Image 1 (spheres, rainbow, N blue to C red):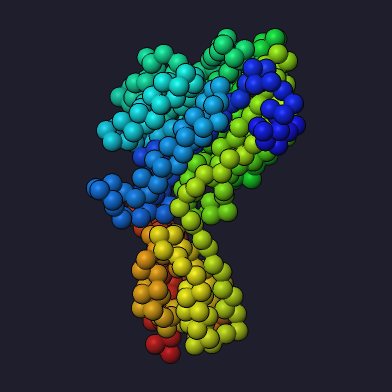
Image 2 (cartoon, rainbow, N blue to C red):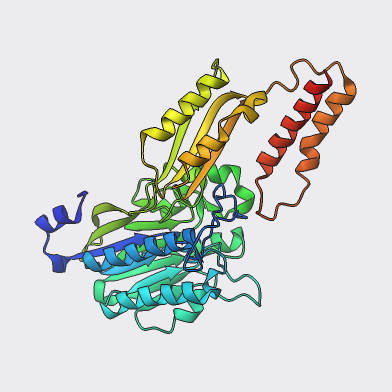
Length: 409
């Protein structure tokens, strides 16, 4: 398989090649709030530009880049694997108008669009709509949102797109996949929104996800299976790939490099003959880790300040993680200086991996132990509306209890 479209076109005439652009998980309307599907650690940033959340606009910009790439590379089809909108963000007029206008750019260029619904915007209640319903009437835009398998025939490029959208439950997904049948003489591309059991995330969050066995996808015998739902780009072999989300949506996605995938097919045989990963220009998200073990608070503060002064982090999302930090020293950190040095970032988050000293010498006092042991279960019963970090609340409470115990001593 060739690793760029240029290499493909050195060996094939353009009219003998079909080029598809695989895009997944745009999440238009995203603003950093917590996801009920546990896909990412929330990073809510309240800064605005022209009355709109900056992170919402970041996602818009990334989506526009995917349209730019499709036009610049003169692709033959644009495949969107789902979660085009984050929940019901399409109800915001600015977001839906932006989305529609971008797709009109492809329509005017004669590039067909196939988009399926994802778990974030599947209309599973009577009073819920879906942006795919609104745009489906446009010629050249094919949408699948009813939760059932649908094949989309694109005769001009000799391709059938086998659409397996997010759906009601696992049984419905299994049934849809059982309906996928390869069409001989055509380029057969699967387009699906679900997880795969070989990925750790889905093993740990199976109750939140629709999942399939990798062998089930292999048995579909597609020339390519374009997947969405998993936010990290991942090649599963057998021409089965996740493209990953087009922006880093949470702090645990910091190592992701947002991208789209170009795939080239032999128009006559259907064989996938080339692919190219095209990276998107998104807001920097940077994580710095400092080991604090065995260091005095003076040395830790000096290391922090030196680190923050070394580079320009303007407009970046910056995360500083202190490893093995003595929890009783937290209030001695140089917070004012950190705030000043990071004032030009879009967001600065301090994460502390603390050394736990709460139970080293306190187990002989039953009342104290009971207070400490009871705090975490109590705090986790507080309903989280997305406005706070539950883990941070638990840890902060433990630190306060520790200070009270120390003062009593």
